[in-house]
Amino acid sequence: MHPDRLTDLLAGRHFNMPDRIDFGMWPHPPLTMPDIVQHLSRVVADQTWFPKPFRPAEPGEPVPDLVVIERRSAEEFIVHLQASGPTGFTVAGALSRTFRSAEDAATFYLRTGMRLPGDLDGWKVVE
Image 1 (cartoon, rainbow, N blue to C red):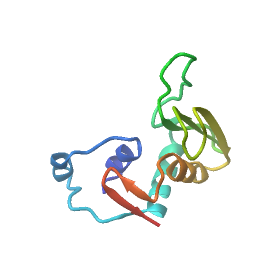
Image 2: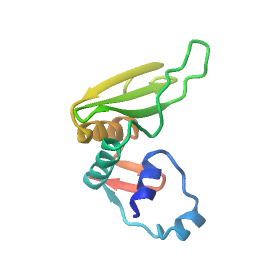
Image 3: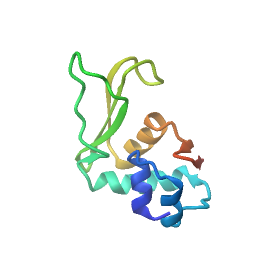
Image 4: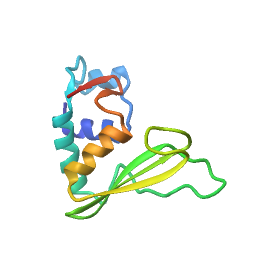
């Protein structure tokens, strides 16, 4: 898969079947966690935010379910998670966790925020 398309998938973009065919992404073999972690590590090491800047919900606002990686330095990455209801990581609210490497932050983002290995917009992600 083209690296830009994988980045789009990891940022939450959906590809419909015509797009998958146009981009040469169909049929598609399973993706592997080590490959995805390596790819996302490179992406977050070069960006301040992935996939977008984090802004916690204000009281009275709807609380979107999201997970975001913030790079503060080459050795400080913060994964921000926010949920509107009970999930595996929190109950209605936000949680932040700090990591010393892009790889550790990417792994946490993928496993906790995106619940991988498993399904990624129809792509099977395996260990």
